[in-house]
Length: 221
Image (tube, rainbow, N blue to C red; front, side, top):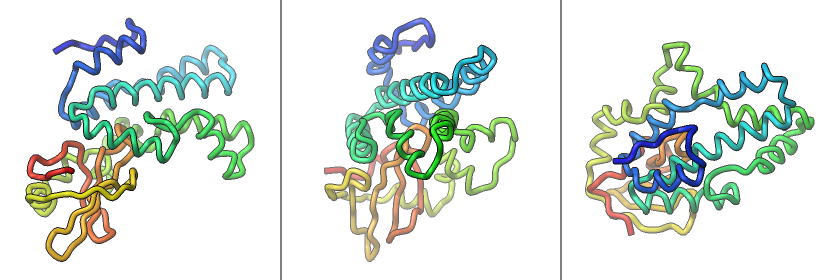
């Protein structure tokens, strides 16, 4: 299996290698978190005196490229297709929010131009996800969101994921699949992968599980 060498290849070359480097989705997320380097890039630009607007642009590009690389590595073509469709519907981009989308969203919240650039930087750095690495502790709710494999240890969750389920398309890219399981309605929600687990299972309108790898016993159309 080819090794992706970061920082020595162009982004196009990395994408070409990524398309051959297929792994379990959960492992792709772990690698993504392990190599997330936005904070060091940001600190370097601050020390260098990079203007706020340029810092926001570079951090956005770095994060957007990292997400594109993670999507390219998805082993299951259906996973990738569902994620890209959801991103196109939500952001108008198959990878994630464009730079101007983030700025416009911040502007619509009443932020000044400076606040808009800072909002882009916050999106790229995601302190809500990465600060746990230094604190060393998490409450259970955040642990479940950040490390879905821990949630699967719950027997009730494991039982749901091991059921034999046949899914039907909904036509909604954000919630593309639905199934009737006994008296309950299950819906699959696509999340902001790789910052979040790829899938959430919604049972009668309530999130009950977050996971990355599609269960073998679930049939998709």
